[in-house]
Image 1 (cartoon, rainbow, N blue to C red):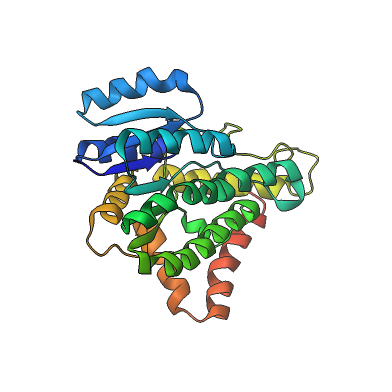
Image 2 (image 1 turned 135 degrees about the vertical axis):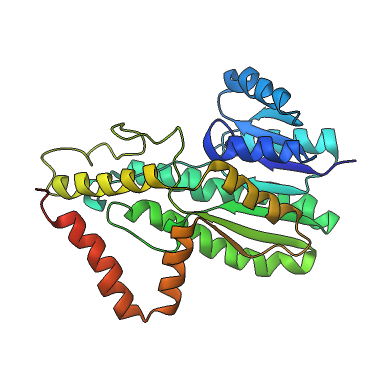
Length: 288
């Protein structure tokens, strides 16, 4: 009897590779999508890799959808060993340019969605006195950046939730791990697209327009030069699920490790002056 893993948001990117890799490794994986028309393509990918993947419908912002998917898994398998909270969206733009509904949607998916799915699976894990809760966060959950105010806010919120939850449920035999990737190139985020950008963020009439353009250039340059792959992130998730004593945090990527270590060990004022100061300077200095 294999352990069952629930992975949210497997349409593309991290979630897709996480689901396929865990299925290859011998887990029974239930991967969620909002649009079930994607099911044939995902099942074909799983068959090609000999991965045990079962696609189910779930919208992490809809409690009835979450309950239906979790109940289906429990009826078919009897237990859920691990949940990987991956479903998420990106939102970039200077804070004044971001609409209230955009920020609320960001939190509803990335933060409250992860809370709702975790709440739904915890009773079964608690009763079994074993389980793994994995949350896909980001380096943005440790360090903020211009045009990332809302996104970092929701990732910081995830980090605080996970840190507290870990202490609450570890005595029950259930562990919590955060996966913190650096900027990673995926098919979802491509230079020149409006994906993940606030409606007013790229408005030429915005007082932040020139700075946002510079910030976007830095963001996409970092993405296109990134050495991190979706396989690296999936590998970190596999370790968090399979290691006898999983780590609290898995930082993915050399740049992310360097920046997080620098902030940890360099005095705060020096780090702010040299790191944040350099970022702001590069964004606010007019391009030649």
